[in-house]
Image (cartoon, rainbow, N blue to C red; front, side, top):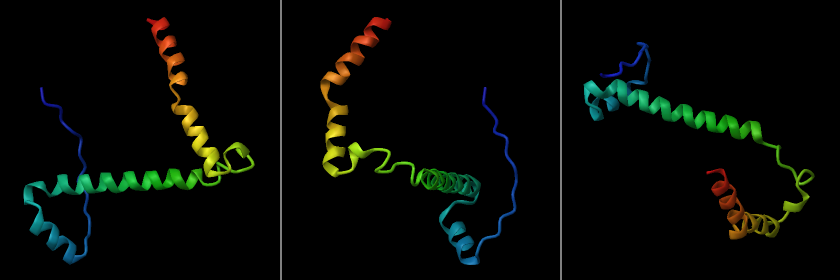
Length: 97
């Protein structure tokens, strides 16, 4: 059984050159899907930027003096990637089975 999507018709005004290029490059039966995809991608970028903007300043040297230099960061990442760290996680997973 096909799942139907709820849709809403919108009236959008575009610059004439943009509308002409859209009609030239996208088949008429595919314009709504094309616009929906473009809007979806644009909104995702905006949500991402909004999250970045909210997170600015959350990480400070005062909060994390152990990660103030590039060398500190490298050591931290190496510790995260060290095999012994994951062996313990594997044991925990096996015990849960």
